[in-house]
Image 1: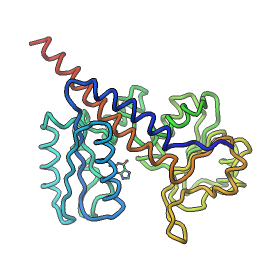
Image 2: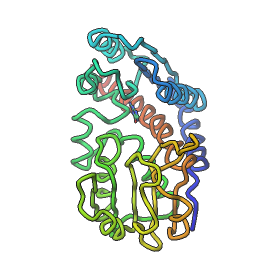
Image 3: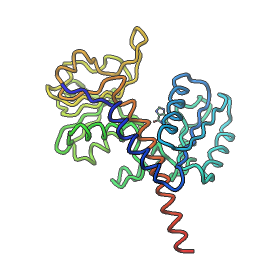
Length: 287
Ligand code: GUN
């Protein structure tokens, strides 16, 4: 069994990104919007700001009260869409119930959509011509590649079909030439399907969901879960003590997928800046 060290891989990529930013004429800028006072979201947003500082990306954090109206939120997004110092915009999800997440997703300019949630960017990914890659699935692909694993020809099984993880994960594995199955709460005989997996990705959100009987000997096991166990300790979906000995590679929680998500956000923000620089030069050429 090999442990995939997400912290170490993430640190290596951040060092590469820091060098890239240092060589840019102007720093990329990221705006993060947090509505309400969900404590987990507040931690994620703080970590994003810290990560930006670490690689030299300019960042602005907007902390709005829970009762913020849709039109005020839309107004802030419009202003950030028009702000040339901002290359990436991220609205931390979930939003308070009275706000419409889909409206927010559609409002963010596709050029600044560093989450890759806008239908335009989802369409590009589906086509196989992505501009931004969704952060968590992209981070997982990096973990797989940098561990020397080639998904081509392998059976990949994804448990979970969310727009943030499961669905885009399936698309990226497909683009890497894996044979992909997506499972969900209505899947019949889930263990029979997951036992076929050479690469098993679990994005369920239930502690202890993936047990040893669901895993093929020698499988690569990727755990996207971020759960709390009975003692309040952070844990994934995978029953690590029983699954790890059967797997060829496995990600721990914490220290596996988690650190990669923000790293990919940084990468997308730099990519957004690069793209605008290119567009600026194109428009200058024409002028
Ligand atoms: N909440 C949990 N994951 C994410 C994410 O990847 N992006 C945003 N915007 N919100 C999230």
